[in-house]
Length: 185
Image (cartoon, rainbow, N blue to C red; front, side, top):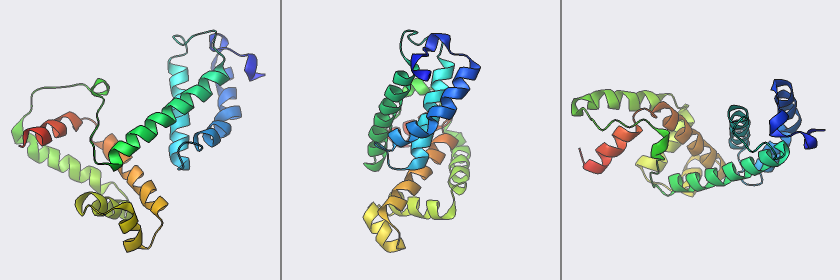
């Protein structure tokens, strides 16, 4: 039934039906690219949110199912690209995602440090421990897994979670952090 539905004739009921019918299939599809189920679910949820928010501007002749699978695949590729950058310690910021203020109050360093500490303390204990070993002691994922007697996949999942939480919690400060790091304050 949903194969003949186009974006042009989508309403709230059709959207809800699409979500119920295809969420699991799209998550399984996403797991062909990203191994963590939580990452796959987050990607699929983002695709559905984007579909709903941009339903009036998306090509109305395109099949919704085709749009969903293509969007999930593209977001998976973006996730893989971004995740590899984080694993290689490269800081990559899409400036278009942030409101940029070029004025930096150097005296607000204490506030920034407090925000970083707050964000870091929101991480679960095991997640925080793994992040410290990776970023502060510069251990490789394999070394962390051996030291903590856990799998490498667990280390990867915990690092992904830590980075996601920190990005979310510090999103308003990311430009300030980058400028401070680059200018050597």
